[in-house]
Image (cartoon, rainbow, N blue to C red; front, side):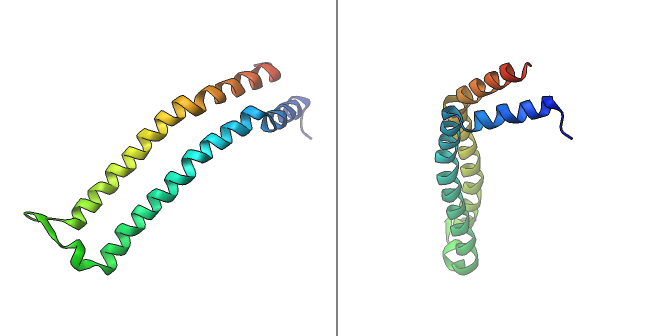
Length: 112
């Protein structure tokens, strides 16, 4: 049987979940995460597809022994770190202020 404290915490969470701030937080998160996830997977699949079915193209030498496959592979790392950097910037500017307000409101309501 749940305690009254956990029941109260659950009620407060449900209220916050329905709040405009929470909905804005979800929308801002999704507006960043979904497009960038799709873009990254498309880029990754392009790399995999080219590696499997465009071997001639991927083995094209660019400089010395550096070929397109190696450049694409290295760019996978750069794109991963680039997206992580962009997400951190987005989260600091767009998500964290709302999340902090929600957390402060939750803590106030449950008496933390």
